[in-house]
Amino acid sequence: MPRFFMLGTNIKGGTALIRGRDAEHIKVLRLRPGEKLTLCDGSGTDYNCRLVRSDRDEAEAEIIEVVPCRAEPSVYTWVLCGLPKGDKTDFIIQKCVEAGASEIVFFRSERCIAKTDAVEKKLERWQRIAEEAAKQSGRGIIPQVSWLPTLTEAINCAMQTELPVLMYETGERESLSHALKGAENVKSAAVITGPEGGFEAFEADMARKCGLHICSMGERILRCETAPLVALTALMYESGNLD
Amino acid sequence: MPRFFMLGTNIKGGTALIRGRDAEHIKVLRLRPGEKLTLCDGSGTDYNCRLVRSDRDEAEAEIIEVVPCRAEPSVYTWVLCGLPKGDKTDFIIQKCVEAGASEIVFFRSERCIAKTDAVEKKLERWQRIAEEAAKQSGRGIIPQVSWLPTLTEAINCAMQTELPVLMYETGERESLSHALKGAENVKSAAVITGPEGGFEAFEADMARKCGLHICSMGERILRCETAPLVALTALMYESGNLD
Image (cartoon, rainbow over all chains, first blue to last red; front, side, top):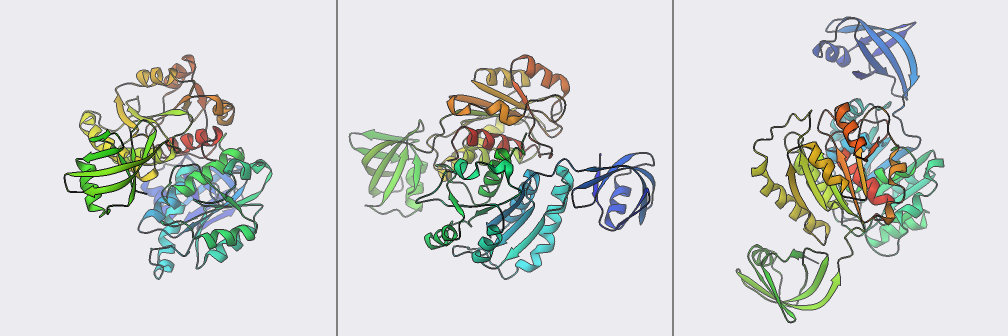
């Protein structure tokens, strides 16, 4: 069933009035009166509807049932990544939205080689990638993509969650499975991964002192765009959200 | 430390003679006499070496120690994927090699929309992608990429392992965590994922009758190129190979 987020949609009584991009999209998809579609309110609730009429500017749908979106994981997860070069950001956004991230944050850390001056301009495009991936994978929310200028702020963000983890390549670390034990009982978590060159020792130390779990992900060297998805998947698996 | 697979390398006594592409690569990297490098024999053994000399055609290295490669997972895992369109194959190969796959197999199933007539020609390029990813991620083997013309053959391949799993989107399924319980004690496993449109019901039924675990991966719809990596990561995590 086609899914739309209710950007510019009005619910009134048992009827939804859909305007803007979604109305155009319904037209493009050639959905006909009587066909079913799902409207997501972006906060985890799905409205299963039947299309009544569709014009280029506006579509009208009858609401059949209102249900919680089953695709939302039990744990609200922040994926925080050292800004990588080029279009690796797009990959991270698309795949982590599919896999269940609730928020995606890029930040600058010591070894970042990507230019960070044009980041603000990219946010709109990144958000569109998140929206597309959320639709395609049947998510109940559109994960927010945002930017933090420093690792300190990223660590601070992670510290607000019940289960903050930072992935680090060397030195003394906790095993990932040890850190994630009990993840089925937490409501929020954060995974932090580094840019191309990983983290400096003092960056990992700072995170450790702030109470984050400093974890390895085995003996294989993961690319900076692969690590967030692998870490997130491990968390989703351990918390029962891949079953 | 730079890693090379010993394609065209001769070990004699405590010395390695490196020829061909690897010798060129050493030259391009401007490694100097005295610098360290690792030669992998492709079967899970690493030779840590010190460079003695390097010409364009040949390099010589002194072997310092011979150690088992720590990056190889405890479970030999076949990742079998319904052939997807375009360059999604490249993505699957690169990411699954990083994440610990031992063999990657593409096969044709009912809903494949990719053309399969030119597959044989692509195998060489696919193998090069696997080789690059194996080097980059520090693997001890170069995972083999191969092609099977039917799902039946893919299922047969999976049945030779101790833990064969097929991912399916609908109907009666076992939870992934239930299927993977005890994965730390198996020596071989297989994960099968579908092409863009997933599997037909009769295909999943066939796999079930052959004794495969038919599993879900949660309520989110994963793209056909994301599913193999997510499934493999769950297996690596459960078997203790992400710690």
